[in-house]
Length: 364
Image 1 (tube, rainbow, N blue to C red):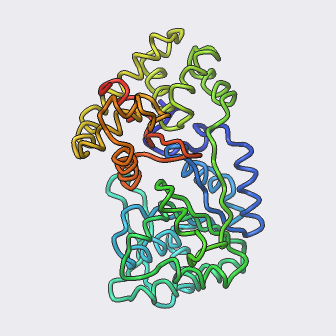
Image 2: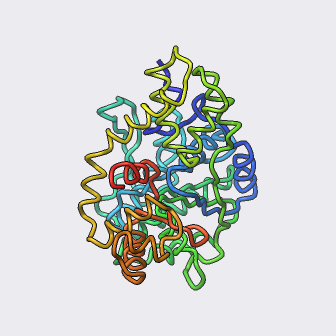
Image 3: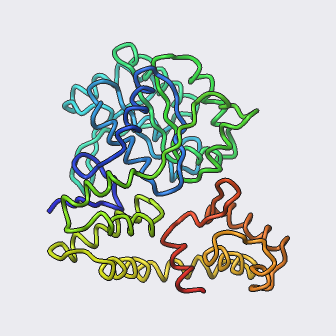
């Protein structure tokens, strides 16, 4: 049975809905070979959006998607770029390997098979190569490909390059980005402030890409899609949308439970609340582990943030947890550095909506 509400995997093809304006806007950047930094609150579906655009337009562009979340070195970064290039086309293996052998001067490639899916792919062999050799090979290759048709390179979790200490990867990338005008670079990431820091004034990538804010999916679009799969009113969809704060991953998780556990029932508030409680209880042990790592002031700040959400520095709120204004400010900044909370227009919020609801229900 196809899952119409994936929340732990990417939503593409039939399970992808909404985002018509975003798709149109981003596609125009592809067409004009312009660069984008895609920003949003976490868990809003940025990666699914790009993957769906790549699926739809794979014949129009060479679409290369690379997720660098796990990199610990510059060599791993370069290897992932080469792996993305090696698998950009789904021709027969012999034809693809022959084409890659003509493109790549230093890197060899060979076929491999995924032990889980049994799907064939192509693996770059880079053991004896330096970072510089791999990067030169990668960019020279995509420059060649761009003579056939425009290239779109999407680098997900791009902020991870800032964790590599022995090489300024952003400065190294700048020269390649400037060199070719038929390539669109799309930078995404889940750690918003780390990502934006890479494009700030005086940073090597300053003004090298246009920021693009991805907002929550339109509520009407959510209802139109969801009502095709479960028996639910627009009012109840609005209730879910509000309680999830428009966070795509969270409301997809709720709808997933409703679909598989209550598909034949008319969905009411009681059923929705049961589904939300199921999610929070399932995450209880993980959230408790995170919370137990907090200092005393961080625990106080987190409790007040989940309880009130605003007016955190008012006298009455601070007195409730016996914390000073300076200590509260310091604790919030520390939680922000840990990427557990975020800030918009001077308003602090918990980055994970389910974590916020856990704190509201279990700590207050």
